[in-house]
Figure 1 (tube, rainbow, N blue to C red):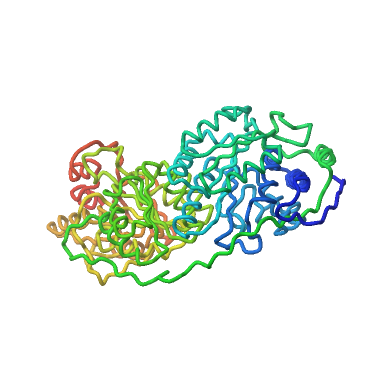
Figure 2 (figure 1 turned 90 degrees about the vertical axis):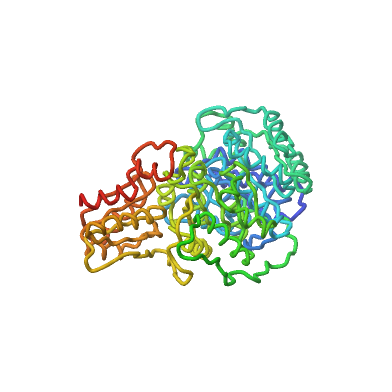
Length: 623
């Protein structure tokens, strides 16, 4: 790879398309060089989109490369994150990374040029690579820029044709159409070939056009290698009149005759000899830099009210209140902070997000039954500096798990609330019961998992989540239960509450959420028999209070851990992990939902699942 054409003059805004063609070739050459040097990567997927990105970068993308935090600047999302060689080649052309970094660190351990883009790079807003997600994130970013910030930022998303088979793409385009997001454009690189052969529609660009239009978007089909046609299409997209999908027919491996439109080259770097021939065929190494159009001037975001003190709702001890209701009231209190936004998936009268919608309609976003898009929109709003609270039934969050997982990779900060957890919900049956959510959320990198037992702790933990980094999760009950704590109580993350204790305790009953109430009732039953039981409210499931558990193990020697959740991955495993870390091995019983539940009353289902007060007392007696 010795060919070298040194063209050092920067490409200015509005430059002649012949210079853009040179830029496209540079992007191709650098994509080949980087992936071959790394010994892995997706050069052919990068080659197909190089013309599209060259035109965008030089003539339409209003990026602020020196100040990635410029809130008026455009956003670029690579939904086809496997084309990272192309993205990093763009960064080199912009002058924000050097040739040495591109050629010697790509895909290497400890380097920021990872195999798929992540926000460790300041010009990357969200992690991509799990296909079908970038379009959804782009919708959230565009919605926040327009409706929350009132700024002229545009959002450009590059996606591949393979990922157009994902339902989440169409959830996103449906949302873009419904919101009439004129600042949103998806550019579809229709290169015909996926990982294992032809894609669903091959080069039938009209199939994508019809679908995009059916979802309320403007669609423009172009030859993705005709720079003039691409330029016109992107100019149309930038007019702000409608959300636009540019459907570009391209050739995978374009510019390298030995791999162009050839099956079997997906995800494979070119061998060194072939790479050398490819660079020669593409005209050699270039040193072009790109300035591109500047973002419009816009005021810095006002911070008035951010982090302001919040006056939480108060509840009387003994009053019966559902934790989901307390969550809704706490959201209204948090509305005093302008960074607070709330999203729901058409269950606001159950999650009580409707309370916030009534108080702050301009910061409430209805996503309808589209949980994946709800989480993606939340991530997009977090990108724009907001703190989103997104809520639905805990059972329905499971379908958005990949978005939650990738939100953690994006290092996004947001709060999810899952309501209607466990068999406690009663007659609706197992399709509505969140019995897997603790396992799902505990496994998310850097997550915080909170499960309040009463209204006071629910309100306090809802507020506490506003100050947490990363993904936080609140688990809420359907039914109303007695308030256990006064308004003066505090609930630090990682803590717990000891509701009953004495020097005579011989067993500890540890629960979270509704099972705290069952543990208290079981302690009463045991007390009638002369057995003293300590009761722990483990409202913080991750991190769990290992010190309190170790102290309870030392004091009583026996633990009964109770959760309204399947045994795998929930409270029981969190407790066992904490005890192992503290080198404690008490006698332990783990009560969890091990049956497939049906319909019934809450009391009937708790007993059938083996987690009722009577079953807890039985377990304590056996210990």
